[in-house]
Image (cartoon, rainbow, N blue to C red; front, side, top):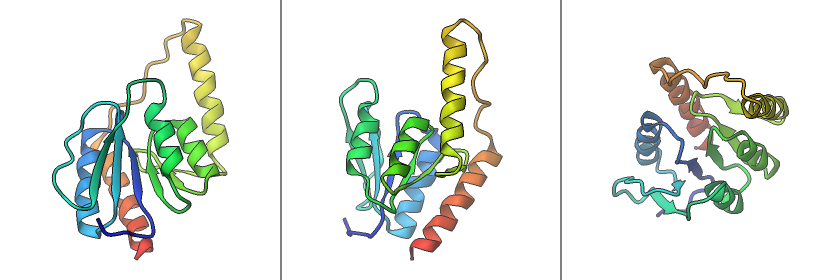
Length: 153
């Protein structure tokens, strides 16, 4: 595997399949190391730029693995707001599968909303989940990823 300056880390347990497929194609095209981390096996194909690490089952095990291995400037693909907050603090970038970059400016409000919604759910109030990933979401993610990859060259 070619050692690149930056890497992509994917919190793969909850990452939608179209985003995983897009990331694998992008890793090959841009020759950038991309690491998928999950507690269940994931077939990432056979390419020198893509790897998979299976961690033990358990709460936040994949998140801890990513946070322990990420470097400043790396990109982390996750919809886990606490993980996004942690990697931003470590100097990495975080993007959700809908193409939204989490930043120092917006992550605290996202964390507060997440905690509020979790409190509501635990008190029995059903709020529903996020809308299903749309083709427009995948396209937004692809555009943001391409933009980021272009800046890495």
